[in-house]
Image 1 (cartoon, rainbow, N blue to C red):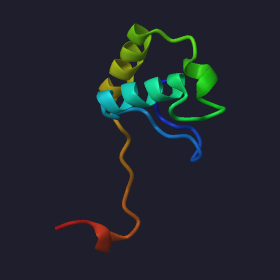
Image 2 (image 1 turned 90 degrees about the horizontal axis):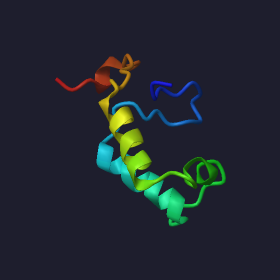
Image 3 (image 1 turned 30 degrees about the horizontal axis):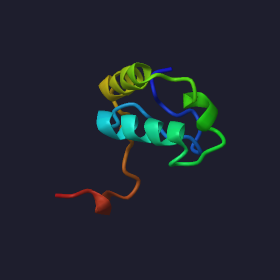
Length: 75
């Protein structure tokens, strides 16, 4: 509900760039980007609803994760 994926096969939307979210939803709706999962989710959304969803998810805090390999942390 807050844009955090509950499964590793789904992307987290929280904290994503607003313009990116709008573009992806528009591309799914226009079938420029094909997905049997996403197409029905956006099919009936207006441009205003797409913008509102993008605003909502972009405003949420992205989750951070601990780095398992400390050598990968920039100094």
